[in-house]
Length: 79
Ligand code: SF4
Ligand code: SF4
Image 1 (cartoon, rainbow, N blue to C red):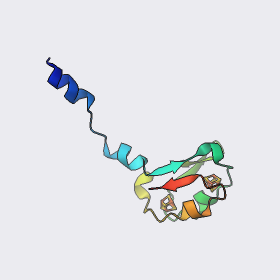
Image 2 (cartoon, rainbow, N blue to C red):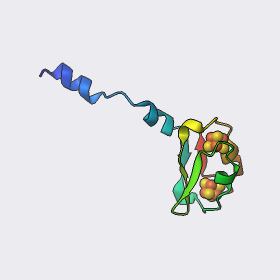
Image 3 (cartoon, rainbow, N blue to C red):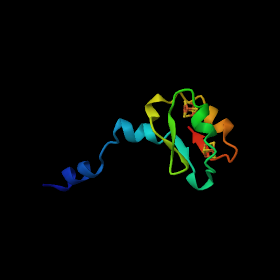
Image 4 (cartoon, rainbow, N blue to C red):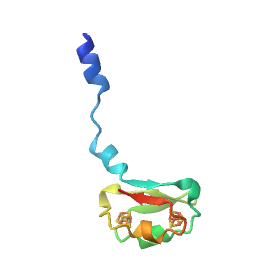
């Protein structure tokens, strides 16, 4: 195996799921567990997990940013 093939192997392309997951950032340290974002999301993208908001279905997200707007702690960012 030459260096060329090693390089190619390490440069693994991101799967669609990895790319999709990165567009919703939840800063869980700041999450107070109020559940407002989970209730407000029209597409059921978010769930509560151990009293923190968590992304359950990023494919369903329409980037409406309602969750961002409603979070009192400003801990959600949708790109
Ligand atoms: S941007 Fe809209 S669809 Fe996406 S998680 Fe937030 S509320 Fe749900
Ligand atoms: S609205 Fe903000 S503080 Fe409340 S559960 Fe969602 S991320 Fe956490």
